[in-house]
Image (cartoon, rainbow, N blue to C red; front, top):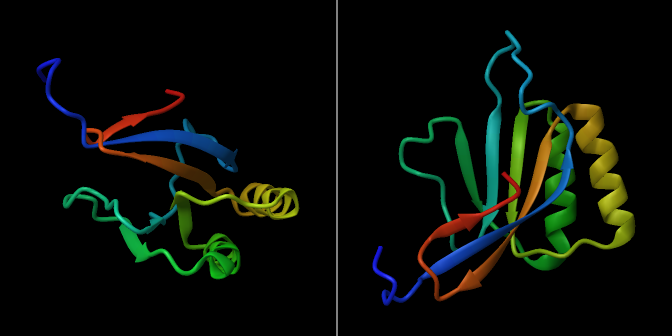
Length: 119
């Protein structure tokens, strides 16, 4: 990429909780990866990914808790959302209980689809 090219979108990763080990090798059946998003989507070859249009702000927390507690979820990614301290605590507890990774993606507009994260 040329230095003078304008950037389109950049994503900074704010991880709320890793409920399951990223390195764990299990022989369980595959689980889904969910994305609650307004503008981003999984790559087309992501066969285990489900993108859901992000609901209004008041519904994000209850939807997230239902997804986590379904037992069918490996990871959930939420675009541009702030949770209260109480909600964050409940999400962390549920993520640990159900071994689900929960990640908030803070989207910065006008960059080039680059994801910046803790890895």
